[in-house]
Image 1 (spheres, rainbow, N blue to C red):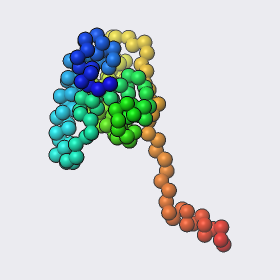
Image 2 (image 1 turned 180 degrees about the horizontal axis):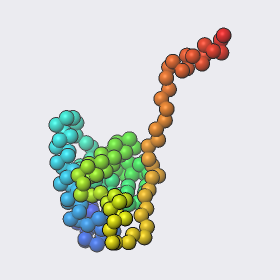
Image 3 (image 1 turned 120 degrees about the horizontal axis):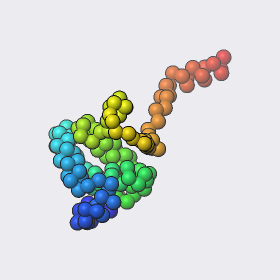
Image 4 (image 1 turned 45 degrees about the horizontal axis):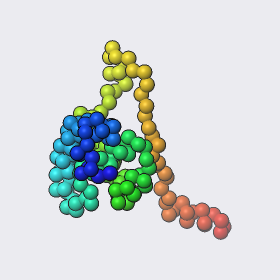
Length: 145
């Protein structure tokens, strides 16, 4: 679902769909627009989707826990492009500081009692060892001798 279809919905429906209020969405959008201007100075190629659609795509991914493939298919972009866009949006909003969770020490010091904190790590990138050409060649030489 594109931003043009979502922006005309009532506040309740917008929140049910995205998980955030319209005011929060506009705050996020302002932060991302500033970061986008800085990013475009370094690289000149524009993105296929508008910034609003990319933010909506990231919120949809975080809210519904769909795979990158399914989200990318619904927006008509590649899976890797979807992954890169969502990671950029997440990292930009985290660097801003307005949309981060308090740290563990702050939670322990506060008087507010939290019952449950859920963290989803379903599609986290895996670091795999790099294959070196030297290792492969040494293995072959050992077999020959």
